[in-house]
Amino acid sequence: MLRLPAVPALRRRADRWAGSPRALDAVAALSAFALMLLDVPGLARADNSLTGVTAPLVLAAGAATLVVRRRAPWVPYLVALGLMGWLHEVTLIQFALYSIGRFRGRRAAVAATLLYLGVAFAYFQVPGWPAPHHGDSLSDYLSLVVPVGVLAAGVGIAAHRHDLVRALEAQRREAAARQAVQEERIQVGRDVHDLVGRELTVLAVRAEVLAVRARGEAYRKDFEELADTARRAHLMLNETIVRRADREGATPGLESLADLAAESERMGSPVELRIAGEAKALSPLRQTAVHRVVQECLTNAAKHAPGLPVRVVVGVEGPDLRIEVRNPLPKTPPDRAPVSTGTGLVSMDERVASMGGTLTAGRRDGAYVVEARFPAGLTP
Image 1 (cartoon, rainbow, N blue to C red):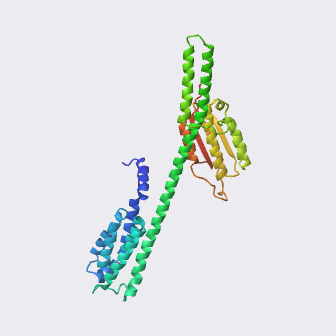
Image 2 (spheres, one colour):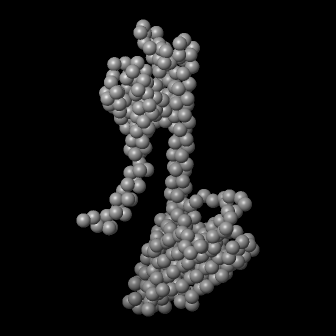
Image 3 (cartoon, rainbow, N blue to C red):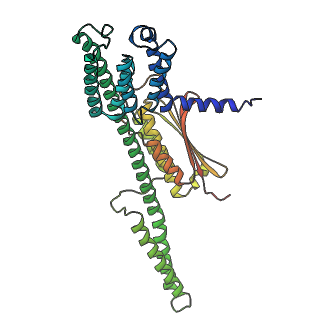
């Protein structure tokens, strides 16, 4: 008895196979075979000694070579040249030339097309080769052969270039995502440097004060060593993470969310900001993470849903901090396509992951919702 959970699994497997290169190659082979079957009556009657049964078998064997057209496109090409001389069949050569142009590029396609034209001309010169089905004269014959080869190879070359463009775009998106992750990691490191470095400085100063106060006592040496340790830790933090002497302003926290909301409203998108009182007790590093997530969400909302209201909720649910930014989906897309690198979600995800949390984004109930959760770090 078939279990119900197995049906969706089989369906997903079938969907993955349907979009795979193997499935496309199988479709190409079946399409070529179906087209060649239209010539079977003529093949068995006039062009050769094959019967109505053996002709489809031979054509099926030839079409089956298209299954390897990605790894070895020259195999169906050579088979197609053989079928053209034996059965005077030019359907398979079209698929073969397209495959060479698609998967081997322009030079290989041009060479294959020239060879095809030369072989076709040689076939026409063979005594007894039946030409009535392909034209009474050489010009009539070539008027059929030349367009078939040139058009098939040209389409294959165009598809090859399109594949290269898509591959380059995919590499560019991947590189942009990696760069966004790296930049966000650097930003996290800078925030850690600002916050932890400040605490280490305070620790070193207090240890020095205690060492002075403990002059002549047994604890003075311990306080001096503590101050030296704090200074070394601060120095290592500077060298390991980053120096931020050129950066102006303090690390942003929850108090800066109001400024972000005001800036968004000046851009035409009103913001409803809700911040739970418990969230104000978050550590400076977690407050900075909240600021970065909300900032990126408001920027994306202004790009993709200009003029629509945005609701921002920052709350504490049990041990977790929850950030939700929600805006309605626009009924029509913006007049101008928003300028975006597509790495905003990557940066937010990296920021939230660095805090040990998760981030989700997508359409929900007619709105676009971004939700981030990470440990609040608050003592109960």
